[in-house]
Every structure is written in structure tokens, then in C-alpha cells.
Amino acid sequence: EFYSVAVLKARGGSDTKEVVYEGLEMEVNKMKIKFPTQLFINGEFVNADSGKTLTLINPTDESVICKVQSASPNDVDKAVRAAKKAFDEGEWSKISARERAQILFKLADLMEQHKEELATIESIDSGAVYTLALKTHVGMSIDTWRYFAGWCDKIQGATVPINHARPNRNLCITRKEPIGVCAIITPWNYPLMMLSWKMAACLAAGNTVVMKPAAVCPLTALKFAELCVRAGVPPGVVNILPGSGAACGQALADHPLVRKLGFTGSTPIGQTIMKSCAASNMKKVSLELGGKSPLVIFEDCDLDKAVRNGMAAVFFNKGENCIAAGRLFVEETIHDEFVRRVIEETEKIRIGDPLHRGTSHGPQNHKAHMDKLIEYCERGVKEGAKLVYGGKRVDRKGYFFQPTVFTDVTDEMYIAKEESFGPIMIISKFSSKNLEDVIRRANNTEYGLASGVFTRDVSRALQFAERIDAGTVFVNTYNKTDVAAPFGGFKQSGFGKDLGQDALNEYLKTKCVTIEY
Ligand code: TAP
Picture 1: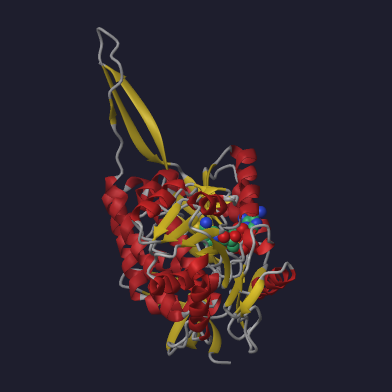
Picture 2: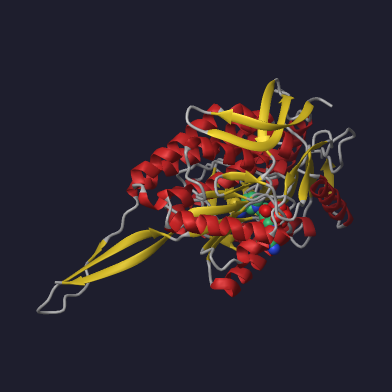
């Protein structure tokens, strides 16, 4: 055991707020961390109706971290009703947009003050490498809250030049209004960041929210709930319900008072959710789903950069990255050299305890996921792809999986088509004599989340950017997401955007007002 565990009734206070909850305090990563283990409904931490709990496992050493309350459909109903009341009658709907911004800025400041603690919690809960968690999981979350806090008082409609009805004249204006009670359901790969990407836009637009984090990684969401109280977010505006997808998630999709659902997760669950949203009350929905993003590397690229970025495109966050390059197409003339360099660099990846500062590759998120990766690789070998590096569980405690490289992958193979969501590089060759053909192969997937190209030829890069059917295109870079840049997929990678101004529209409705005078 590398940390001590003590259950406590925590009573903490910022300058203004006292927060009471049942939670856990631990000494870990040379600091004290503390977080709630209860549901957060209507501004209070409470136990689940059913008494059910989720058991959370630390993927680094397979130890039990704690149990947290698991929400039932009845808890969902309570939270939705609290959110509805907060939206209809609460302070949230009465304060000005600028005051709303102040609360969100304060929340971001509190997240910043607690960033080491949040990153440590993310690391023990999800296996995220601590240094990366600080910069990305938590760092980008804070940026997201500040970015959307800045939008609060800049949401405005238009004056529309409609035809006049002589002899009278018309004034036609649009109002951008919040939708009401929104639900947010997120996956386990970037728990706090996925919460932030959606919830910051949702609250900036003036909605109230009930959020379900992934059952395997709910802890940063619960710490976030504590910070909401300290920041002065009024009761009912934010509700956080750890729970299973089948019970808690499904109840949110079915609930008649929820008017919008923002989802990030797999394509099959996205389809289920969309059906439920339609059948229950036609709630608005946005879906950020799976991907199998192509990365095309031409002979004329900066090879050092292509190797570095190609590896990050696959291995970043242990491959648990929705925009991860699921398939690399490398021009045949540089293929062998590219593969040689990738293997040389992959051997240097430091696998280990995610809390150690020298570690660059931590454990996979949970056991079922690691087992799926082992099967995925076995299937690749069986189908005749060449496993040139890794492919196995690391011989140590914890859910560690070796960074893996496959070559000689042909288009019809399972590993060429299906997402692994793990650190598995899938390399195929192409000939640049036929640009059409490589673009056709890159587009030959039902997914359309991201894509990338490495070339010094501007014309070729722009043709690729124009013709590729994906929501994000990286040219001579990869993984470069930013809070101001819209993010989201095409085809079965879903629809709707997170981040950027576009994300606000997912959480607003446009009302058109026409006045005759
Ligand atoms: P899912 O199995 O789809 O789970 C996502 C969330 O949906 C979880 O919170 C899950 O609950 C919940 N859920 C499951 N069944 C539900 C139902 N019937 N009704 C409502 N909610 C339900 O995905 P995952 O395995 O967590 O995440 C991996 C997938 O997410 C990958 O395919 C990846 O590509 C995708 N992903 C996409 C993006 C973007 S931005 N497009 C980002 C990250 C991940 P449980 O906790 O009980 O499972």
C-alpha cells in the first residue's frame, strides 16, 4: 500500500462556504487529498436511495480506493427536479449573465488552487500520468471554464431584415435562450476534462445540469462538486450522480424534464441514447463518439517530427484518447525507416507508477479495458498483421499494457477498422503516386472524428484537408486541441461540437420575435 486510507466526515471551509460530506482523506503523492464519496444533489452531498455503491480500483496496483454511492433512477428524478426548480425559480435564473460569469471564474480559480489535488485524484482513479494530468486533464479543464466564463455576457441574438408588410413595418429579432435542464454523460478517459468541456458551455449558456461521470472514474467529478459549493454555485444548478450507465445514465436519457443531453462515449451507446432521447420527449442531443482517425505521412515530411507526433498521436494518455490516430498510412519509400525509428523511440518509453515524475506511460484505465486490448492484439496477429513491438500485458502488478506496433496491416483486417482505444499503432503502406487512393482509404471508415497529414507540400496538405471526411484535421501536428477551437466528429463519430463558440449553440435555443409597428 503506498498510501493510507481513512474514512471521515470532512468539514472544510473556504472564506465563504462550509462543505459537509462523507468522503475520503488520503496521504498520497506527498500531499493530503480529500474528496466526497456521496451523490451531489441540490447543493448537498447525500447517499443513494438504493444504498448501492460503486467500488473503485486503482489501476496502478489493483487496490480498492473506496466505495462511492451509486445513483438509482429515483435519485436521477430528485436531481432533475432540483435542477428544474433551480432553472425556473432559483437565483441562477435571476442573476445577470455577468454575475454568472463571476461564479464560473471563481470556480476556475478554485480548480487552479486545487489543481495538484485534482491531478492526483485523476491519477489514482484513472491511471493518468500525474504530469500529464496536471497539464491536460486538469490544466485544460481550468482553461475551458475560463474560456466559457468569458462567453456568458457575450451571448446575443441578431436583428433580421425581414420583408415589411406595407404600410406597417416589422422588427424581427432573435433571442438566444438557455434550454433548461440538461444532462451530461461522460466516459472514463479524461474524466474531469470531459465534464468541463460540456458543462462549462452548458452553464455559461444559463442552463442547469445533472451529470453522470463514468462509473469507473467518478472521483474528480465529486471533488468538482465540492468546489462548486465553495464557488457559490446555487443549489440545484449542478448535480453530480455517479452511477451505472444502465440505471443512472438511461434514466437521464429517458427523463421527461431533461431537454438536452450531451454525451461522449462509444458509438453503440450513442445510438441507444439517441433512440431514448427521441422516444422520451424528443430531447436535443449531441454525441461525441468513437473514432479511427487516419494519419497520413508522406515521404517529403520532416521525419523527426512525424515520428515524434506519430507516436504521440497513438500513445498519448496510453492511447485512451478519442482522437488517437487509429491508423497510420506511411509512404512506402520511408516506411521501413519510419518503423525503425518508432521502435527505437518506443523502447525508451518509461512505463511505471503514474505518480512518479519520470513516468511517461501509466496503466490502462481498468481491467476490462486492458483485457480487450490483449484480445485486440491477438486478433491482429491471427489475421496476419506483423506485430513488431509489444502486444502484451507488462509483467508487473497493475493494468499495464505495452505500447504496441503493428505493420503490414491491410484494409480489411479487424485492427484496420475497429478502434482499440489503447496504445496500439497500426501501420499500413501507400504510394504517393496516387493521392486519390490514399484519401479514399483514409475515408473508408464509418468514423470521422479526426485526421492528420505530414507533408511539406502545401497543396497536398490543403487537398487532404478539403477531402478528408473528419471533424478535425491536423497538418504537420497532432493532438493540438484548444478551448477556442470547435471539436467534434462526422458520420458515426457523432454530431455537435464541444469547445469554441460552436459549443454554446449546443446548449442554447433560438427564439425569433417579430414585431409590427
Ligand atoms: P461508453 O461505454 O459508451 O460509456 C460512456 C458513458 O455512457 C458512461 O458514463 C456509461 O456508463 C454511459 N452509459 C452506458 N450505457 C448507457 C445507457 N444505456 N444510457 C445512458 N448512458 C449509458 O464508452 P466508454 O467505454 O466509457 O468510453 C470509450 C468510448 O468513448 C470510446 O469508443 C471512445 O472513442 C469514446 N470517446 C469519444 C470521445 C469523443 S470526444 N468523441 C471522447 C472520449 C471517448 P458506465 O460508466 O456505466 O459505463
